[in-house]
Length: 279
Ligand SMILES: *[C@@H]1O[C@H](CO)[C@@H](O)[C@H](O)[C@H]1NC(C)=O
Ligand SMILES: *[C@@H]1O[C@H](CO)[C@@H](O)[C@H](O)[C@H]1NC(C)=O
Ligand SMILES: *[C@@H]1O[C@H](CO)[C@@H](O)[C@H](O)[C@H]1NC(C)=O
Image 1 (cartoon, rainbow, N blue to C red):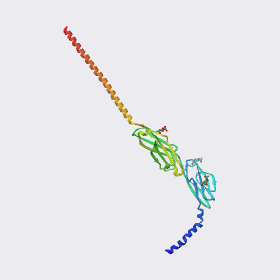
Image 2: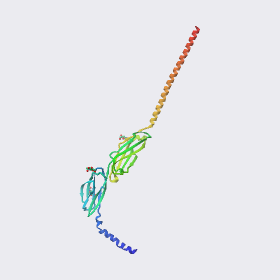
Image 3: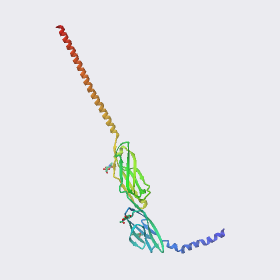
Image 4: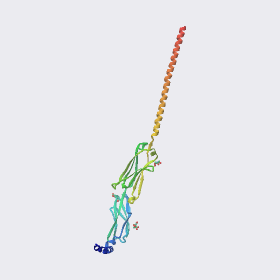
């Protein structure tokens, strides 16, 4: 065993060093290609600029490989700046430089987004009694990429419900959420709204935020309703009692009159009878 190991321990390291010094590829590979920005986020149909650069002092061939329509804006030996325009689909573009016969690439992902142009909020019904159910619906037409979208339903400044999406396709889609809630007394004191946030920061872009028009939920409280019923009942009973007493008075009054007239009649007849007897 020690005899077998000896050639490696004696010759392995110098051989590797020699290979590093004289291998023809190792020296030329020591150049880099850069792209700025490293990722592109472009609004659908818009254009963007990209700067390809290299550490190679004298690149022989250079360019931007893409299917997008491109314009060379400016060029120096170690960098070139392009504009890519009418970007309609997410894609990848490549900056390339060739230095001493060796080509290096740098790929740049291009994400196309459709911003939330409209955020539509709908309360159903818009008029609800405390304790009853109502629905908050928020929709954003034609937005992409859906997986970067968050919809938040707000009551005043307070978030009620939040939803993120799992986007399967890169094509713009309608984002829609529905949230069922129960009406509270304080719901009538705040505006409802829906906030759409397209967060393109993980892809090298910014945060696009848009909020719907505020909507008011008309809250109907059942308490005054009960009071009304009680008031109407009391008034009805009082009215009934009044009418009944008036009727009773009338009836009793009639009877009393009749009785009195009846008595007079009897007395008069008695008097007449006594007079005729005396006569
Ligand atoms: C392009 O990038 C290189 C390297 O970062 C930089 O020196 C050069 O100024 C940039 N060009 C433009 C037009 O921004
Ligand atoms: C932009 O691209 C669309 C389809 O990708 C094409 O129909 C349209 O003509 C292009 N517009 C320009 C100005 O190049
Ligand atoms: C609700 O929104 C309307 C219209 O924007 C506004 O006039 C009103 O002051 C808001 N109410 C509250 C409680 O924020």
